[in-house]
Amino acid sequence: MLPHSSLFLLLCVAHLPAPSPALPFEQRGFWDFGLDGDGGGMMMMRDEEEGSAIEELLPPELPICPFGCQCERRVVQCSDLGLTAVPKGIPADTKLLDLQNNRITELKENDFKGLTNLYALSLVNNKISKVHPRAFVPLRYMQKLYFSRNLLTEVPKNLPPSLVELRIHENRIKKVAEGTFSGLGSMNCIEMGGNPIQNSGFEPGAFKGLKLNYLRISEAKLTGVPKDLPDSLHELHLDHNQIQAIELEDLKRYKHLYRLGLGSNHIRMIENGSLAFVPNLRELHLDNNRLNRIPRGLPDMKYLQVVYLHSNNISQVSINDFCPLGFGMKKTFYNGISLFGNPVNYWEVQPATFRCISDRLAIQFGNNKK
Image (cartoon, rainbow, N blue to C red; front, side, top):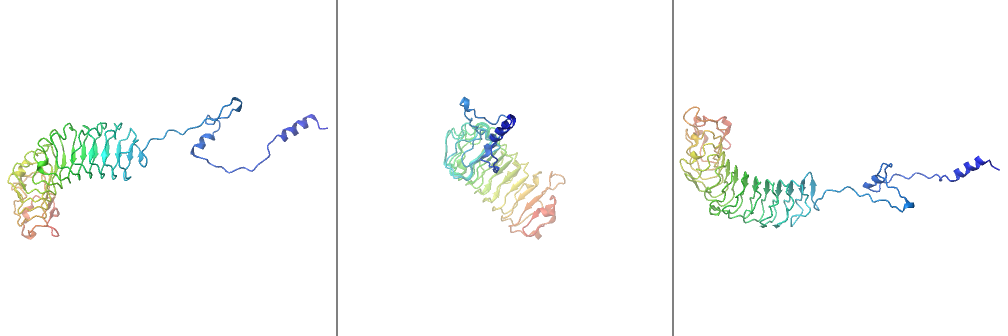
């Protein structure tokens, strides 16, 4: 008979589990790491005696993002998805919303509800022809609206007062009514080229109250410089229109202009004295017109640095066409004058004509430079 202590040891060995080969590690899912804890509070033990069950461990709440879009750092990108409407579920803290290159046809009243933090909205290259009058009301802090290449026939109503930049070119806008931009005292830049608008399409008071620095109405159907544009303008671009002349008082309001774009029009004449109203002008674009002489008044423009006159009908350049007679009267020298594409021979132009040019390479006669 075995001693009592030996019998106890034998019973203990009998209850040991049989050895088995170790199985390889298998990760069942991302959240399985939370179930394989070391007892530090992550692992829920089963207590059969008390009838409890393993509590379901839910993953942390993920940020909301519309299907197909990409949401990161308060930027929601939903471009090039073939969307026909503004998607639902846009995060409330979104700062930039990109909806360009889709097939959206309409903006409804509640499309942007709750997006009070939005800073910039891009709707470029859609098919939007209808905008609810209250569609932009929730966007109290939006500063940039890109609405180009759509089917709008008018500027949307009730734009946010916080708006600084509006780009609405290449639509079907033919009319800008009085008060269209009322209440937009923060607006700094409007780009509305590529619309079939004529001079008569701007009602008196259309731009009332605006303090713009930049305005572009290129590629439209203008036959003259529009009246009553904001007198605060620093840049005015009217290129690619059908303007035929610059009359004496066309530029009278715009004494703050730095850059004036009148290229690719039908301008044959610039009335004497017209340029005297823009004494601070730095850059003047008159290329691709029908001028037959250098505009009068250039020598008196003390700050003018760049003049584009290429592709006109200019056949003669006189010695005092660009530079003043007195020394030191011009505050800044020219650094760019283009005359190529004109029926003028560079060898017929006297060198003293360009005595107020910073560098002879700044004068362009096409393949030949004076």
